[in-house]
Image (spheres, chains in turn cyan, green):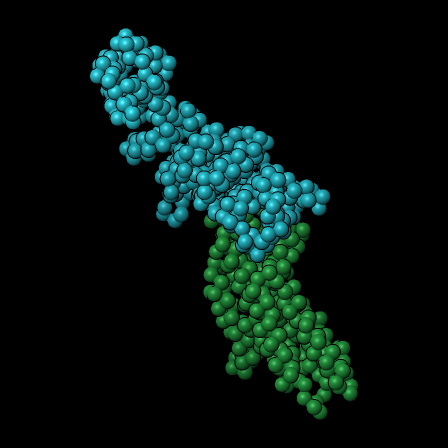
Length: 325
Length: 240
């Protein structure tokens, strides 16, 4: 669906995007993740045709955005950052205007507007002026306008920006339902959001791709450490600590106090690139069983995408950029 | 073409949804009404709107930049330019659509002044003749369209509405002054060129009731260059 190959962007002497490459397929939600100023919005603007890349190629369904601008624009639905809209227009007024711009006939228009309103749950406010809507509703109007002409590629720049947790959840559900028959590319600096919404994550920093894979793959490849979390009765702390420490593969045991006479132990594993998988878990369980300790919790302490992200950013400062795809 | 008309329609309707549109109309009609009431509607005078058209021409000076300043500057400031230029509409369609929307606004703004002709027809012994009336409206509308093309270009060059307004105002003032004073101060060799370029003489012809097709073509033709330049400015923006 979308193929981005080695795109660069210079703003005068500033090299904002330095050879970004990735691809995305229909039915997939791909997240561009990176800190502010990483080059996410610049990359998105090049993909949507706001401006062309200084170098590199972008194709949508095999059509180049530079040689087939009109055909590719028809295939893209774009929600820019902070959803710019005309405040003086009504919700349906704006949506039918956008439908006309994309050349939809009057019968197609009515159907498309109806469908977009339903998809984004905007029926209740469809006659309201956009200026009277809350931030969450405006974001949805922008999303409805982007999805109106059933584009194969939906590009959403920071769709969850400025929304409250309930609105973020609704936005996530809408995006997931849109991805059923389209490819969704979204950018975000909110890690948890990307982890929950996206099938695949492309991590960008300083204009370069640092990593590309599913959240699970990224965790496995780039997790700085893995651990097992154990909760036991306080009276068994010493025996359990000794037993776990002597288990093969365990590097260190950290202890923390819990309420009502319980204690948490975190066994950091030596093999940093492998998950705290079943083997390691059963080894720890056996060690505990041998000393007669029954834990109430024994679970892998998988690193969140956040830790992966920070480790990637830190390593990118010193090492060559890595692409794991 | 449908994208052009879609954009023109949205542009025109937005004037009536925003206070700035109504304020511009109110200001223009107040000024026109004053000229009509104080100068034209006097006992014993010939039933003619010539004095009104002469005055209204100068009133376009602040009104046209007020109509055109928003066209692109506001889209650039608010970011709505992005969904617009990433739609399948071509740059020229976008510029032309906005320009047509603004020109329609100007036409609608002139419409209520037809009431003055009706008043004159009612109170005068001899009603005003239709020929000079049509020519008089053309003497307002055609230069107005040209001024709007300058305003469209200025608006496409900045995301600051105030700057777009002032730049348009100054350029229009310079054109009007050059047109009025140029022939008197320019070297003899340049006189025929300046005479041909002069707006004043063409507007005067209209005011006399002469509808010369060459004048119509001149004003519409002169509007093309700023529109093409505005399209180029938008394209340059798209090319980053």
